[in-house]
Image 1 (cartoon, rainbow, N blue to C red):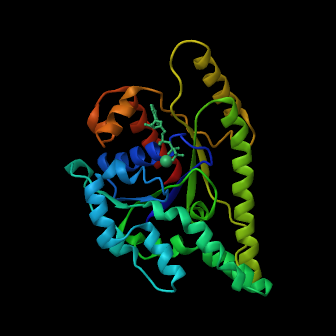
Image 2 (tube, helix red, strand yellow):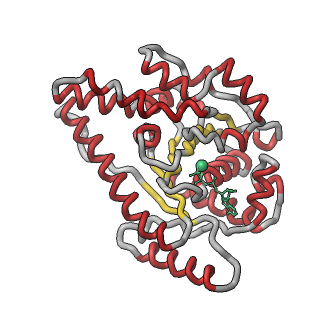
Length: 303
Ligand SMILES: Nc1ncnc2c1ncn2[C@@H]1O[C@H](COP(=O)(O)OP(=O)(O)OP(=O)(O)O)[C@@H](O)[C@H]1O
Ligand SMILES: [Mg+2]
């Protein structure tokens, strides 16, 4: 049964997509090789375009649909099996043949509004709680059908905590927050932690309203990893080190920070342009070594 892990942060540009892609590729490429499904839950479609070119994506989503198809089917009270949407081996390189993809489209942008508009039908507190759970369990139910085909399902979330991210969290066995070490991220990580805890509490409450015998409090394993750490000698490098030390010392995060961080080098940008992980584009480069190590830590910590 697959381990489902979401990569989240409501801040934009903090390496969620790059880290989902690299950890996914590393798990699939390096011994013991694992079967990995990448799910692009972001309407920006960045993860999708790390895995395929525009023309093949356009054709593919027209014929087989995208993640948005799963949500639309729920709204139209139909079913659309994830099995039919999953793009098997979207990347040509044989080293990446263990990676499959659920692509995204810009249409995912409207999904929150469309899901929210369904709430009005609920009247009793039990109905409200049931709708709350239903709207956030769409991805969970879709993944259940295919979970036995994979070792890992990795979900790249958009930079917000709206319903697409909440669906990802409900479907997950754990989550990883990617973080750049600067002052605002350090402040933001506490807000993020509080907000995610609140979302999970709301889930427990809704479950108990619907079924008073339900399990009760459930916590998701969560970790933090620092990415894109500034390595240019000078003030910024000092700030990065200071901020990492501050977060590592916070009681809430003390045992939750990955030892490995990735650094701000051009190897990532060059690999992105080639739609390849650094492991294949610039073997031996700084982030090749660091992302391999981060993936090993991911296996150790998240199973
Ligand atoms: N270790 C790194 N070294 C250099 N550049 C990096 C590194 N990690 C990520 N980047 C670059 O930083 C930019 C933002 O990364 P990415 O798209 O992964 O962030 P994100 O959190 O997914 O953004 P969004 O919130 O918009 O989805 C990209 O241009 C990416 O290539
Ligand atoms: Mg992204």
